[in-house]
Image (cartoon, rainbow, N blue to C red):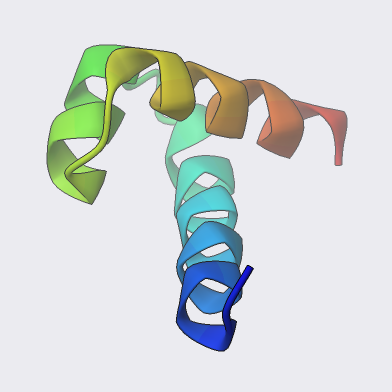
Length: 50
């Protein structure tokens, strides 16, 4: 994985962590991060574990 991809992944996880407490749905997170619902859900779940 390249540098840009690692940065994007980290930023996506941090963003997911910031919004998970706000009760945003995976669909809203996916749209905001321009990704799929599945990937957004993984980010939200990963952020929840931290």
